[in-house]
Image (tube, rainbow, N blue to C red; front, side, top):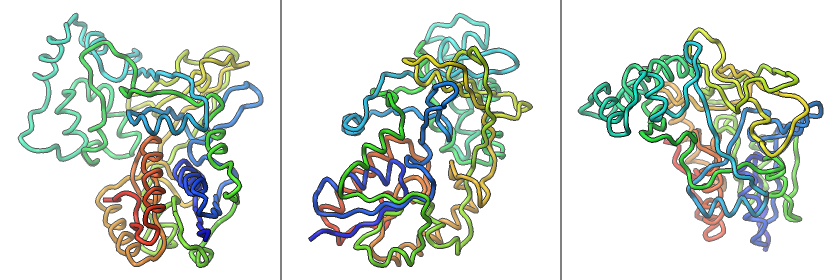
Length: 381
């Protein structure tokens, strides 16, 4: 007997779950996407004027230590090697990020060895006898005041419209700090970009006769009644028609820049000074270095709180949002035959590889025990 499955959202989470269930031969999948395209916020498209592959919702780079996930995505797309390198512009000078030995020596005007730099930074770090209480304490305990103030304090305040002291420690806990000369931003074993873009990757995932796709389609809870099971990767609060209030997200606004020659000569420049209104500039041709564009295309990024008509990007998860989230979790526990999944469905910031991993695990669990599925694919707490 074929199970009637409905999936909401055509990002990586929804696409991977759909493909895994379709490949099992036991499910018939109908996927609904409210936007006019697949791939969610990793949607890419070919710019007709420049020939550049553009990332509509900001640049994405696939990086992971999960070899199974890396092998899986390569079934559906040819990945080119890609190392992401970032600089921070502070007071008119460029410094490599993440902070490494070269950054430290350039910033302080020193010629430290690795051991000397490690001891020097440790002497400037905040000493805590307890876990960091917020993002500022977390960063100060690993970077010290000077590096934090130069490269992150203003940037984070612009990104979140809140001082780092008001943000959870998890915001800065992921900041890499190195005492060698490795300048690749990510330290993962597998890193790359799909040669033909992320949209092509998702299209390949969904290319299966058991999957029916409907874009530009809004779905309500009433539309889900006939499904044997629903996988909801849209916003958690949208499922409940925002009955407990809207969960807080940050959104991004993009200002396009075009020029006949490279605009900044690299993929990403972060602007650390608080008086510069944008957070960074991303030049998209540098995300496909195997191609030669006809002109340069870059985007200034501005962060703002997400309104009802904006695309949500980053869950805020401060005290007020967590209180609303707790009420939605209690509502979700009363639902039957539904699993909330992905970044939006679990209201968590997760990278693409984690989204794929959790989707694979979620689909596998459903195929093992379809009548014993958890309401969340991963804990939203």
